[in-house]
Length: 365
Image 1 (cartoon, rainbow, N blue to C red):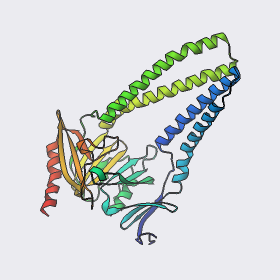
Image 2: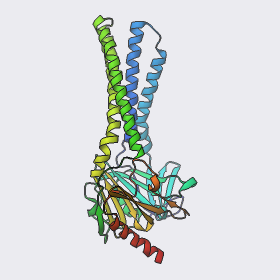
Image 3: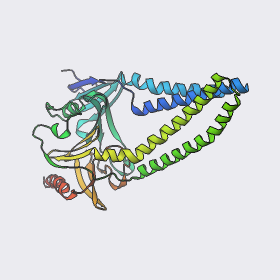
Image 4: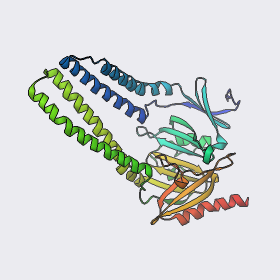
């Protein structure tokens, strides 16, 4: 078996991206930049031909936006095509040429699996380490993007022999447990809470919707007057109207997307979320995302009642951290990432009793 050149450890798994794709954020950036470039270029041509003014700055800005769109679309493909992943006896390594990142397997607190929406056998494996809270708090994670069967790879990282059902995100999570693992408790959130981030997103969506309505109402009369006067040749009129329509469409799309992220998406994710506590792990499935946490990493269980439901926070103790990572407790981590938190459940006593049983066993030992 080959050995890693840096740590001198035996390599137990080696692979690359199965399907090199552009991440969603870069795709959105490319589309927005391309639309802005087209709108600016359209207005530049109309202004140059009809008003006989210098539009060098507009053309330069259009080219700059087009460059951003091309870079956002192609650079991730070029970068990921050369990335290689290694799993040794003690480390997980991300490598691209001479650039290397690694995380020690014994220091991994939990893992996130994001299954691909196009291929049920492919996805991302994100390895996360709990770090100290307070002034030293930071994020330590290693992402293995677009790997085949990320749940099988996670089992290999943990030193578990992968079971036959692993390898497809289309199978229920309860059917892809480790050998000898059994479910002790299962639940689902009763709703989606309004966090500070979600409220801010809703306000931004409302502001964008208002800006769209005002822009549309303010641009229609001038466009109508220009077209009625026949002041522009047909080709320039098409560019003028097309540029305005593209700009309005972009603003409308952004407003709808932000509103969806604030009002609809959290409720849909809550309906697609399921919590599991087994005799060895805590598992959370939310849409195409999965969280896997070894119960030995849990230091404390915090029950936070809110109205008629409870939020159960799992406080993690990081290896050699000399402090605890709250993992969303005390209002931290108000983002969209899947975290080891049972949100809006009504059976907090049962799950708390099961999780604290392991905690008491650790203290007794």
